[in-house]
Length: 160
Image 1: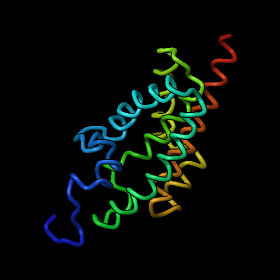
Image 2 (image 1 turned 120 degrees about the vertical axis):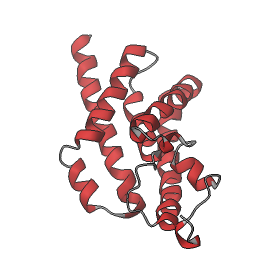
Image 3 (image 1 turned 90 degrees about the horizontal axis):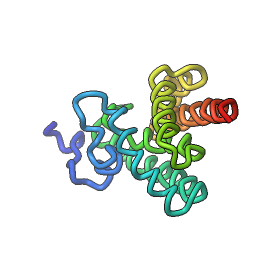
Image 4 (image 1 turned 120 degrees about the horizontal axis):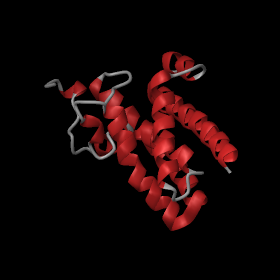
């Protein structure tokens, strides 16, 4: 892109955050790469402050994601760019709230979030198709994360 109205530098803070430290620029499966890149940060937040810190992190990432995504889509003229993966970060962290430090539960939380983010059952598909702008980019992943959380909780209750 050469038009200054549709260009944004890869070193712009909004790009760094929207693409979650450029993980969303992966040529293959950028959403999956963004979700993978979210895992160590989520784990660190859980280790440092438990569910409260991770929940606070989700709220902060959602707010930062609104800002960064708005700038990104405004400057690139793309409505829902695949390279924007900060929405995956916020959504991926939601099922991690109950995964603790268990590696199996982390893998399951990752897989469940990716399943719901890709499959997009109702109402995720409705949100994805009808809610526009930065909020639209972010909200469907929040709901996918909530779906993953519920399924993970059900699994954990039935395995105990």
